[in-house]
Amino acid sequence: MRLSRLFLSTTVLLLSLVSLMLVRTMWTDWQGVRRAESGLDAMELAFATMQVAEHASAERGPAIPVLNDPPSDALRKRLTQFQQATDAAFDVALKRLRQREEAELLTALPVLERARAQMQAARRELERVAALPQAERVAVDKRSTRQVIDQMFEVVDTVLEAVTMLSASAERIHPSLSLPLVGARYAAELREHAGRLGSQFTAPLASGAPLGPQERDGIPRLLGRIEQLKALLDVKARTSLSDPRIDAALQAQQERYFGQSLPFIAEVTARGLAGQPYGMDSAQFIARYVPAMRSIVELRDTLHEIGREQALAEVAAAWRRLRVNALIGCCILALEVGVFITLRRRVLSPLLLSTRHMVALMRGRLNQQLPAVQRSDEIGELQAAMHALQASLHRTQELEAERETLITELRQLSHRDHLTGLMNRRAFDDLGPAQLAQAERHRWPLALLLFDLDHFKRINDQHGHEIGDQVLQHVAQLAQAQLRSGDLLARYGGEEFIALLPDCDDQAALALAERLRQAIQQQPPRLPDGSTLNLSASFGLAARPAGLQASLPELFSRADAALYAAKAKGRNQVQLAA
Image 1: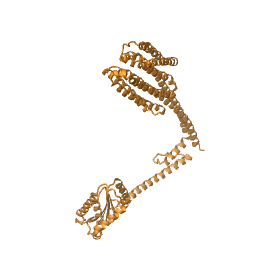
Image 2: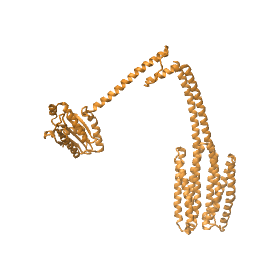
Image 3: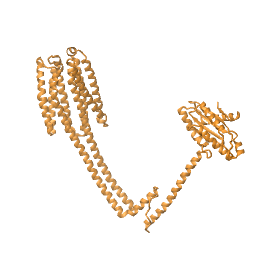
Image 4: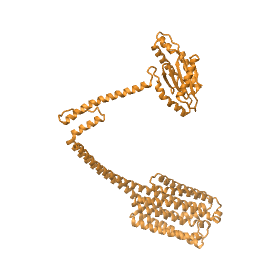
């Protein structure tokens, strides 16, 4: 093996191995970046869906007075505002979810869309029930008002199902997000159960009746679930996430909701169980109970913010690893390249330089400046050979250029009549079928015009072939002036010309041929002595109507027969084939 090849092979092998290691490391780091960013995106999607659940749950607050209390524009306006907020939350979550490409995240999309459909159905039922008289809503159709609230419960249950799916996806993508995500999900469920607890009192407050069996069963069950979720939140937040913001949020929740709202619930429950007057309507109950539930939402937001900070830190760390490894890999590559350059300059520079020049010559770069032959050894012989090769390749290139020019000229000559400059018969036969096929495709009418000069042999005999050539050039110019730009015009042989007229019916073709006949007759060419030479031409025309098919030989045969008919009838006229 030659030294240059051995050196090059060894260098390429080392560079390839190092590059492969670098690419593998970069790919692994890039996958880590993508995984961290996907975990962050999944967490944000889960939080956006939690906000949908929050707004859907909050919408029950203004819906309850509309269902139970006397009709009021203020209540209606407040409900509309909450509905718009819920719709906006749905729009944000669905838009962000539809923009994702991960199949694991997209499984939550139909669930969230189903929740939106459930919300629309619940709103339609609310409108139906709210249109009933108040006495009928409260006393007679109490099940209808309860059904609306149950439908709104189902909406939140479906949204929380999507939250669970997205949270699970985020945890699988990024296990370190498990604790804050689970805590935020518990807080979202706690907020929902707190809302359902308040909904237990809507019907009794509207009618002033004591708590019924349904409320007597539901209130303790919901209180038990609330306490269970509170305990789970305390365990998750205090033991797994050491952050003063969580302690502050838990303290606020304890003071506001568990310290104020639940005692208030106990007081209202005691009145309802004892059959005592409640002393308030639905709107007053909501105004006192709901605001403290904001502390649960704030705890959820705090848990989400902490999880988001962790995810952002993971993303930043992944990017940092990627950059550091890329820098190390680039340094290694630069070191190897430096070693390669040093060895090449000190050991293989003359040989590699000659090789590069030789390769450049073989690739066609003939104008490069070759080094002068200054050595008498093998390198000098190689340099002399390169000079000889360069001269030989220059000559070959010039011959190739001449050959291409000659081929181009021959191609043009093969398609042009050298005398008139029109297409010749060969070009017409090449282009005619394509023009015919285009007319058939577009369902155009089409005509073939064949004409030749009357008594042209007499002109050659009397005035000479030079005058005859001038006559042919003159007629070609007249024909070009009369025909349209899209028509095919050619000298078909001797004094015979042919034209293919697309998108031209028989009447238009007759008119065009007649104009050309008159132009030939009325614009005679001038002879060198100043006199004019009277000319006439006979025309045969074959037309093909739109939608019918006819081959070029068939049209030519018909036009040729019409041309002979024109000559037989005295020349200087246009005949249309039958």
